[in-house]
Length: 250
Image (tube, rainbow, N blue to C red; front, side, top):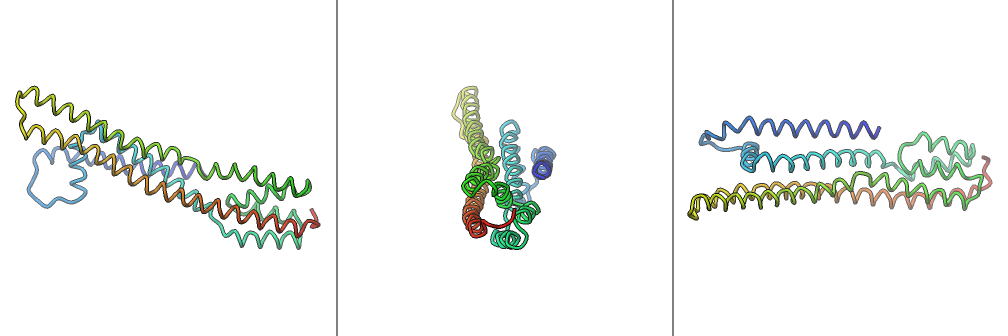
């Protein structure tokens, strides 16, 4: 299921990105012969993309596409991992009291989400004692937490990489501007302004990309934190249920 989510996210975001790049390229000829009219936001965006240079703007766009694809995958995964923990605890407790541990394991097996998986690991070790159950829950809980945080490091990479590429494009653009001044033999305001404008566009787009991904990243971190806190509360209640029903049939 996770691989399907990743694949669909990548396909959808890459499709949008390729469409944007193709639209920008198709607009290059139009921009060469501009018509005096009110420009839409989409038109201005394509215009600035072309002015910034495809060689520098394309990597920044790829950072945005890659970051959004991974963010969508994480959002979907974390939302699927969110369940009503209290309802699950009630089902598990009822199953233990009426039919035993085996029925409770079946309830956890048929319930999606990391908490149900943690409960299942604990119930599978009930016969070995509550101390072993607690250790098993702690160990498997660490594995579940790592899964929740999967791909977040790649998102942070894109957050850092996008503005760095923008600054690099700016520095290269400034070097080219000074080279043009050297060739012209005169400091013309037109030459300087044109070169600086093109150079700074890459930084602007890099910072915008980083800001968008940073907001999404903070949302994902808060989502993971809430899930982890809920898991900890649920496992404490789960251990209390096992203590109260330690004589339940296996």
